[in-house]
Length: 127
Image (cartoon, rainbow, N blue to C red; front, top):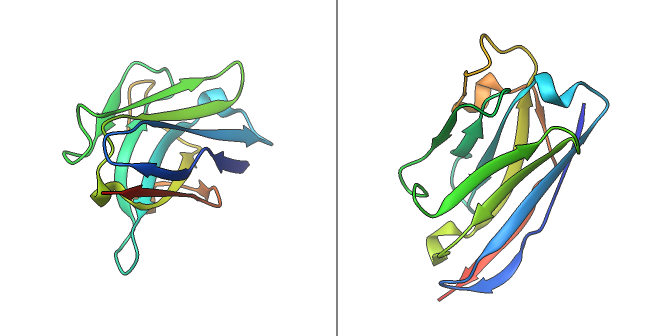
Protein backbone atom coordinates (compact mmCIF):
# COMPACT_ATOMS: atom_id res chain seq x y z
CA UNK A 1 0.00 0.00 0.00
CA UNK A 2 1.26 3.46 -0.88
CA UNK A 3 0.12 6.59 0.88
CA UNK A 4 0.60 10.12 -0.44
CA UNK A 5 -0.08 13.00 1.94
CA UNK A 6 -0.68 16.53 0.72
CA UNK A 7 -2.20 19.84 1.72
CA UNK A 8 0.38 21.20 4.13
CA UNK A 9 1.60 24.76 4.03
CA UNK A 10 2.38 27.94 5.92
CA UNK A 11 -0.58 29.55 7.67
CA UNK A 12 -1.25 31.98 10.46
CA UNK A 13 -2.62 31.12 13.86
CA UNK A 14 -6.38 30.77 13.69
CA UNK A 15 -6.40 29.66 10.05
CA UNK A 16 -7.59 26.33 8.67
CA UNK A 17 -6.05 23.67 6.46
CA UNK A 18 -7.26 20.39 5.07
CA UNK A 19 -4.80 17.56 4.62
CA UNK A 20 -5.43 14.71 2.23
CA UNK A 21 -3.89 11.26 2.00
CA UNK A 22 -4.40 9.29 -1.20
CA UNK A 23 -4.02 5.51 -0.88
CA UNK A 24 -3.20 3.06 -3.64
CA UNK A 25 -2.24 -0.57 -4.02
CA UNK A 26 -4.59 -2.11 -1.49
CA UNK A 27 -8.17 -2.39 -0.25
CA UNK A 28 -8.27 0.98 1.49
CA UNK A 29 -11.83 0.54 2.71
CA UNK A 30 -10.78 -2.40 4.89
CA UNK A 31 -7.97 -0.57 6.68
CA UNK A 32 -7.87 1.38 9.86
CA UNK A 33 -6.23 4.75 9.18
CA UNK A 34 -4.92 7.66 11.12
CA UNK A 35 -2.87 10.83 11.25
CA UNK A 36 0.26 11.41 13.30
CA UNK A 37 2.62 14.37 13.50
CA UNK A 38 6.22 14.98 14.39
CA UNK A 39 7.61 18.33 15.45
CA UNK A 40 11.35 19.07 15.28
CA UNK A 41 13.19 17.30 18.06
CA UNK A 42 10.12 15.44 19.24
CA UNK A 43 8.75 11.96 18.82
CA UNK A 44 5.97 11.16 16.41
CA UNK A 45 2.63 11.57 18.15
CA UNK A 46 -0.92 10.52 17.53
CA UNK A 47 -3.35 13.09 16.14
CA UNK A 48 -6.49 11.29 15.01
CA UNK A 49 -7.78 7.95 13.78
CA UNK A 50 -10.89 6.64 12.08
CA UNK A 51 -12.21 3.13 11.91
CA UNK A 52 -12.63 1.04 8.81
CA UNK A 53 -16.37 1.52 8.87
CA UNK A 54 -16.15 5.26 9.69
CA UNK A 55 -18.21 4.52 12.79
CA UNK A 56 -15.54 5.45 15.29
CA UNK A 57 -13.03 8.26 15.56
CA UNK A 58 -10.40 9.13 18.11
CA UNK A 59 -8.47 12.34 18.72
CA UNK A 60 -5.61 13.45 20.89
CA UNK A 61 -6.60 15.89 23.60
CA UNK A 62 -4.52 18.61 21.98
CA UNK A 63 -6.61 18.65 18.78
CA UNK A 64 -10.02 17.53 19.99
CA UNK A 65 -12.68 20.02 18.99
CA UNK A 66 -10.43 21.66 16.36
CA UNK A 67 -9.52 18.82 13.99
CA UNK A 68 -11.83 16.43 12.17
CA UNK A 69 -10.75 13.19 10.54
CA UNK A 70 -12.78 11.67 7.74
CA UNK A 71 -12.40 9.21 4.90
CA UNK A 72 -13.92 8.66 1.50
CA UNK A 73 -13.56 4.98 0.74
CA UNK A 74 -14.86 5.45 -2.80
CA UNK A 75 -11.93 7.78 -3.49
CA UNK A 76 -9.40 5.87 -1.37
CA UNK A 77 -8.66 9.07 0.47
CA UNK A 78 -8.21 10.10 4.09
CA UNK A 79 -8.69 13.69 5.24
CA UNK A 80 -7.80 15.84 8.21
CA UNK A 81 -9.64 19.13 8.54
CA UNK A 82 -7.66 21.39 10.84
CA UNK A 83 -9.32 24.50 12.24
CA UNK A 84 -8.17 27.17 14.67
CA UNK A 85 -4.56 26.23 14.06
CA UNK A 86 -2.01 27.10 16.71
CA UNK A 87 1.77 27.51 16.49
CA UNK A 88 2.13 24.31 18.51
CA UNK A 89 0.44 22.43 15.66
CA UNK A 90 3.55 23.02 13.56
CA UNK A 91 4.89 19.63 12.50
CA UNK A 92 5.24 17.17 9.68
CA UNK A 93 1.95 15.33 9.41
CA UNK A 94 1.91 11.66 8.42
CA UNK A 95 -0.95 9.45 7.39
CA UNK A 96 -0.80 5.76 8.20
CA UNK A 97 -2.77 2.60 7.66
CA UNK A 98 -3.24 -0.66 9.50
CA UNK A 99 -4.23 -3.66 7.40
CA UNK A 100 -5.71 -5.97 10.01
CA UNK A 101 -8.39 -4.49 12.23
CA UNK A 102 -10.42 -6.36 14.77
CA UNK A 103 -13.80 -4.78 14.15
CA UNK A 104 -15.33 -2.12 11.95
CA UNK A 105 -15.25 0.18 14.98
CA UNK A 106 -11.60 -0.32 15.96
CA UNK A 107 -9.32 2.69 16.08
CA UNK A 108 -5.61 2.73 16.85
CA UNK A 109 -3.50 5.46 18.43
CA UNK A 110 0.01 4.02 18.64
CA UNK A 111 2.75 4.33 16.05
CA UNK A 112 3.61 0.64 16.31
CA UNK A 113 0.06 -0.38 15.46
CA UNK A 114 0.34 0.89 11.88
CA UNK A 115 1.84 -0.93 8.91
CA UNK A 116 2.41 1.67 6.20
CA UNK A 117 3.16 5.38 6.29
CA UNK A 118 2.97 8.27 3.88
CA UNK A 119 5.90 10.58 3.28
CA UNK A 120 4.54 13.44 5.38
CA UNK A 121 3.41 16.95 4.65
CA UNK A 122 4.71 19.99 6.52
CA UNK A 123 2.34 22.29 8.37
CA UNK A 124 3.77 25.51 9.71
CA UNK A 125 1.64 27.83 11.83
CA UNK A 126 2.99 31.29 12.51
CA UNK A 127 1.92 33.35 15.48
